[in-house]
Amino acid sequence: MKWNTLFSKCLILVLIFSLFFIFESAHSAPLKWSYSGKTGPEYWGSLDPAYVKCSKGFEQSPININTANLVEATDLDPLKFRYTTTPFKVLNTGHTIEVIPRNQENSLWIDNERYILKQLHFHHQSEHEINNKEFPIEIHLVHQHSNGKLAVVGIFVKEGLQNNVLKNVFEHLPRTISSEEIVEKPINLTALLPKDKSFFTYDGSLTTPPCTEDVTWFILKEPIEMEQRQIRSFSELYPSNDRPLQPLNNRVVFKRIH
Image 1 (spheres, rainbow, N blue to C red):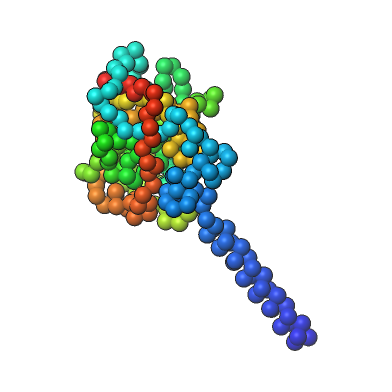
Image 2: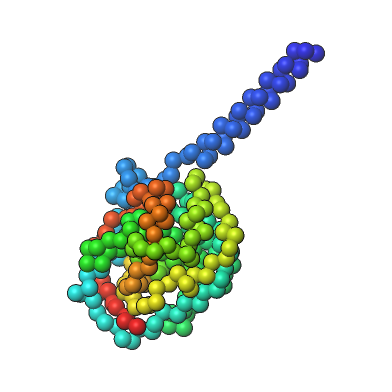
């Protein structure tokens, strides 16, 4: 009887350690792509057949926006943001921090077409540049039309005053991959936007694999502010999660001054 009891206890211990190992392996599995080394940006196109656009595409993002070569587009309508105060969850993806709305009520209207906000995330340093100048952080607000087309709004962040809109987000950044936090206080993203809604726009791609093209970019001209502590809290998690600049090729960058 004693041997049976001992055997049962050993079996239970083996099962516990096996489950622990499986759990830890799942959470420590290497990411398929990254921002450095053999899985970094210059190798993205060869990591998976679905990523071929990363190396073979002709309309890739991000780009440097040379303000001397912009084309004024007076026929473009102003961007119409229809944001409401919304609860969000915050997810550490292993590549960035995503802030995901818990409803589908935030939208961007472009030429009377509705694009629903799916998530916003952060890059350090900025991915786009203005006249070869980069910013400490760039925020991407990703919107999607019912037909699947994406419209991404880029907001530059410069060091300055505390950003109260994202205060709760940056004070509770999930530290480990796949972990998430619920932002208890709903966020009013309208208050995140700069007062000046002038923008640069061009046809580009996702800045991460699979680097899908047919993405319309709207880069807001006026940066917003975050204090150094907020910027540092993100950069400590992601010291460098920005894709290098891509060739403009034959594309035109338009500007719309409000």
